[in-house]
Length: 354
Ligand code: SAH
Ligand code: SF4
Figure 1 (tube, rainbow, N blue to C red):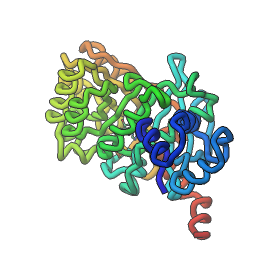
Figure 2 (cartoon, rainbow, N blue to C red; figure 1 turned 120 degrees about the vertical axis):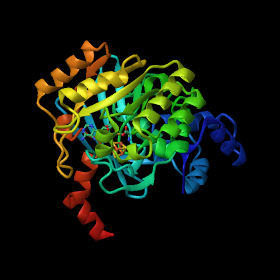
Figure 3 (tube, protein in one colour; figure 1 turned 135 degrees about the vertical axis):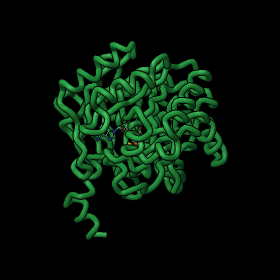
Figure 4 (cartoon, rainbow, N blue to C red; figure 1 turned 135 degrees about the horizontal axis):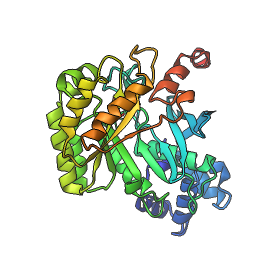
């Protein structure tokens, strides 16, 4: 079976034509896709059309199976895919717009030492339609329509390394920003990467104006390689070169994510090294405290250390914000919810039934 959400407006038009239906049906199909409707809800389409297309295509590809509400208004979703795999996402209402964090892969193969998403390795890439499907269903569940969206911003910061699923992510960016689709501008989209420098350059060459976020997490190769295996392939200097290239091509500032980890990257020396590394770059630093992941053993730091680290950066003229970690009380960190689910009885029971 194919997924209707994988198709562009042009491809929907071709499909309608090939199948012998009048042209205006393409717009109706598109409207149904944006509203995340299933075939059974498409009462404005002729029965024969629904019957024919539903034999070949799923109308939706992701279903919310559980929803957890945080105290701060954040909602965490556990989604099921058509093949039974599960992924997760977070919906975060802000005063400047409502942001959805989406996953790009089931699992991840980058193996960062603090992250729950990588624990079981990579299971598979998501298709463009499955990434889009998360946006569409979250928009629907939060009362959004194509005219008045409940999701206005997207961050590719759920599980998975977006640039390790490059082609599908690029296609997703086209689908999600299509005027006939949900029409979220790439300027309202942030793509976070663990540092695949070669792909950062490819992304820059596409000219798609997404905000680039780089998970730096350490100021020296020695410290970074301990936390992130990817640093052995693309070291800090190669990574910064790719960020500079991105700026040259797009004129857009980029963001460095930096999670403070006890005993690894959070002391005064690290703050000074980071300040030196980033001095003069058109960048911004997002400082976060590490979310504790029980399987990983690494811990975050005390709040006064976060303030001290921030001060050092500010003193050196580096633009920095301390991100409040939304959804902390609902397993907000990358991949934690899915892990919990995979471990749960619920999952074991389902496996037994298979
Ligand atoms: N794979 C991409 C995007 C998904 S991870 C990347 O690594 O950038 C999204 C962000 O969450 C990254 O900055 C990642 O480093 C961070 N992250 C992962 N595990 C975390 C944890 N336990 N606490 C805080 N941040 C974490
Ligand atoms: Fe993958 Fe990002 Fe987690 Fe690293 S931090 S394991 S790249 S999802």
